[in-house]
Image (cartoon, rainbow, N blue to C red; front, side, top):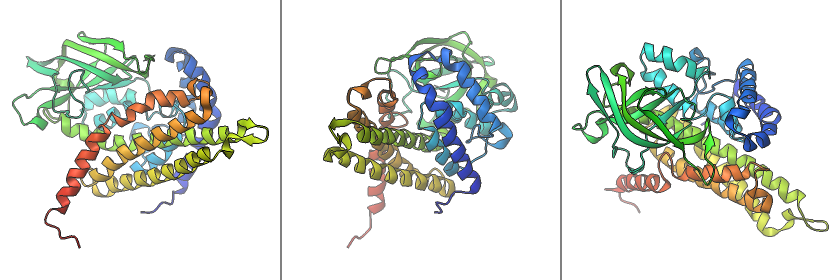
Length: 401
């Protein structure tokens, strides 16, 4: 592996960091105290600035108006953007739109690309992804109640989904539904595009996350699909290949998440160190003179660096060996980075004391919204169990001396 950045990526990271520090971080207090609708106009202005700087959509190919970066290159910028809750949205590489755009680009028909992908990639519309179900275990995605039944030239969709991120205000959803119930488990489901103004698409509520429901892009919706009828032309990719497409989406997506989490951890670390130096506990004695705080800072610095190197290696492995061969690396970073971030955020909150519990800093936002990192895209326990099984299998028949 070569850790040297090209001049282009080094310059892009520097520009992105300056933009985050000067244009976005000053907006956080307003963002945390207002609705998404109230801050959208200023965020749209910032998005236009990013486009003029040619830093828009680092993960998308140039023909879609993006930067066309590799997975490793995008990861480096993603860490910078993760320093603020506004980063990925303003730079046009936010989930779930980033993943939806990638699979539309790979599997969409020309008509689907014209209607959905082009405005999505340019930031004119938003989308959501409906996979997780209320009564089904996320750790076993083949267990799915939502169905899409053929009726003439249409699919009729019925099901109950939740945690469909950013559904509030989205123009369309990509829905995972069972289309082939008699097929083998991983060939039963398909992905189908459902416009959110389609009859039968019912946004029940934005789910409160630790007491905060959110709105607009920064929300997670519960959705009822009640006889939602869409034409068969809305099928994304081949029928029955929903899980295959999902893997194309989730593999790079886990890299994206981990690099964003490193940004969260790095920002929390910076705030923790600043607070430790500035908070006086007694005349001439700062919080940073306390040995336990010094230990938290040392541990956090080492853990962030170790996690960063693991993610860069996983991105390199995925690009050079492919998703299947890199699955061990991806599983490892998923639980290591999520836990590293959670520990650093928790330490930063502790160092800030009562201030850390408020929205006067972004730490409380990180604390309540990023705890889920250990659950979504595969809970820690699922990744650990799968990784351990593969490791043990590789030792069968081996003689260890």
